[in-house]
Amino acid sequence: MATLGQLDSANLNGGQKLAVKYFTVAIVLFGAQVLFGLLSGLQYLYPDFLYGVLDFSVNRMVHINALVVWLLYGFLGSVYWLLEEESQHEVVGLKLGNLIYWVLTSAVTVVVLVYLFVQIGPGKESTIWLINEGREYIEAPRWADIGIVVSVLVVFYNVAATFSQGRYTGIAGVLVLDMLALFGIYLAGMFYTTNISIDQYWWWWVIHLWVEATWEVMVACIMAYGLMKVLGVSRKIVETWLYIEVALMFGSGILGLGHHYFWIGTPEYWFSIGGFFSALEPIPLVAMVVHAVFDAGARHAKNSNHPAMAWLIAHAFGNFFGAGVWGFMHTLPQINLYTHGTQWSASHGHLAFFGAYATIIIAMFYLGVQRWRSGVWMSGDLPGNGWKWKWALGLLNLGMVGMTVSMLVSGYVQSQIERAIEGSTWMGYFAAQIHPWFAQGMWWREVFGVMFLIGFVLLVWDLLTIGKGESRAMQPAVSEN
Amino acid sequence: MIEPASLGNFFTIFFTSAMVIMLGALYALLFAFSRLKGDARLMPLAYLSYAGLLISTLFLADAANLLKHPFWTVIVAFMLVGYLLAPHAIWHLCVGTHADEHAEVQPVPLKDF
Image 1 (cartoon, rainbow over the protein chains, first blue to last red):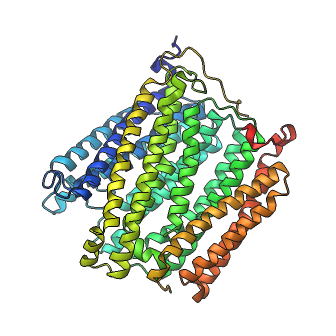
Image 2: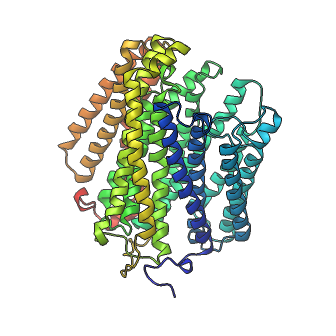
Image 3: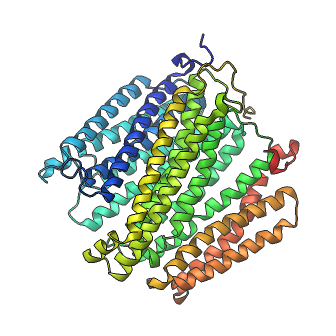
């Protein structure tokens, strides 16, 4: 018999036990992302720092790859978390799922060690296979690429087989198709061509379509599940809205890919396609505001997990500002010509990734901890008034907003001096880098990065301790229809 | 096909682009509140926000040289129509998807959330 307030795996079903493993690695990699982000930020300020030992190129690569992989782990963990409850059936092929988890985690460990200790190869075919593929954001060597594809394929099998033998819900249908796309689209980033335009063309399929199609759909599924669990919203409503939101997202998001094709040597018609769909991309976000107000007013909601609910709200705002406002500010080609690849892009990327993805995975962490501690009370009136989760929430969000604004200032200088005035020359690049506003932006980014790190430490501390020794059982949300 | 923005228009573009999204959200927010609470006084404020969005879009279009080309002018028109109609369409969807629930539950003010 599980005890309230104690971490006990007996509280979890098979899929959830596996999910906890994925969540654990996700948090470790989240920490690595923050650490290597701070190191590379420091190298903007002191270029000699760790030069020849851990160069900026290595730190930045680990920073971004850790982001991609921790989010992937978070999503796969979330999928396993909801799988048995949603299908009302044990996970089919759970042993295989566990095996693949260990294989994937071992592979990730080896890849990171190679990044840190081998760093570069002789530039031959063997380098692509064994050390570093050289494609920004997805630098993993070819053997690891194959490992990722096989792993996602196994998760697809687990998901599809479980739902087909159990209850096949609306969330199930969307999730199964999405897992198939998650596997398929990654293949586009795995072949090498000597033509950089063609190479970049397919590379963006992974970067944009993975992120703005398959990940967004996964987020929609997790949000649907989360709203049923935390607020007790009826299944009929969340599933109807899941279809609507997926349709809106696909309507503008897939061909919004065009805004990445402006400057890579693709035909001019991508200006039209990218410009048109990029202009329409924020409309679903505006529509979401109407739905949120309607839902909020239509029910007396009592949520069963305050930290998770707060992170779901942070997700809505972060997605709106990071993807919507920060994206649209520089998406039209007439201005993107000057901002593409500057700190503007980094500013947008930071807030959008954090707002759209990190926040919802953190919400899932809190849902996970609550169940792991036998469905413990996590509503209001927590010990210490829940200061740890509140401070973690505040520091992480303020840290991220601070970093975003700092990079915005630097990017603004860069787009003007490096791009518009100096015409993207090397001289222009250096003129922008030494400009006081650029340098100050980089300093502030580091300061807010430290604030983010403190928030991260508090988050981990809170996840390890929240609900410990609590004797009250959770107040269930309104039961689903 | 495109005429790059001039240096002097950078800030106008960044600022008006942000305002398009912010005012779009404010319009949607006030529109939904007005319908939800049955408060007709909020609706003019909603359309005032939309008017702000319209002005921002026109400034953006001018600064980014969009109005000099028919294709980009059409995109501007699409944006304006899209932002105007999206809250209406989503409201109808909300009412439709919550129809069963509304037979039993009356909408309540947001402060009770």
